[in-house]
Length: 142
Image 1: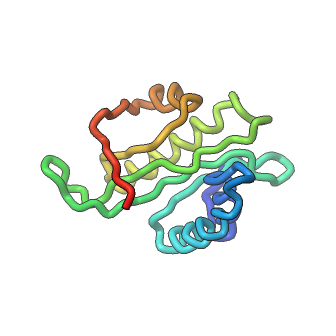
Image 2 (image 1 turned 135 degrees about the vertical axis):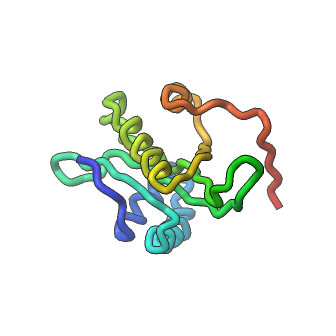
Image 3 (image 1 turned 45 degrees about the vertical axis):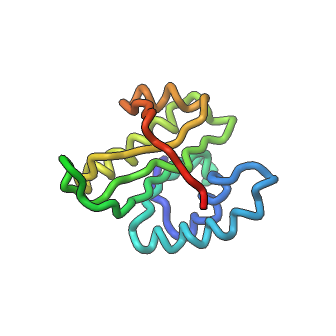
C-alpha cells in the first residue's frame, strides 16, 4: 500500500535522508524541517507500507519557489528527494512507483522542471523515468 506522508512521518523520512548510523545526529533537525514543510505543503511525500504496517520505502518532492524564468512562467520547481527502499523490498518497483507519484504530483501543480541527485544505484531508474544528466550544474558551499 502507498500512502501520502504526514507530519507524524517526519522521523521516518529523516531516517531515509540519513540512513547511516554515522549521520544519526542530523536526523532530528531534518525531521523538524520536514514536519513544518509537510504542514506548509512544500514537501510532499509518499510511503510504501508493508502488510504489517511498517514503512518499507519512501520518496519525497520538495517544492522550490524559483520564480518565472525565460521560457517557463511557472514560479515553482521541484526536487525529488529521500528516495529509499528497505533492502528486503528492493527490485520490486516500489521506488519507481513512489517517484512516479512524485512526478504526477508535480504535473498536477503545473510544475515543469524537476531535478534530483542520484547514486550510481539509482541512475538507471531515473533515466528510465526520463531524467537526463545535466552537466551545467555547479555548487558553492558558503
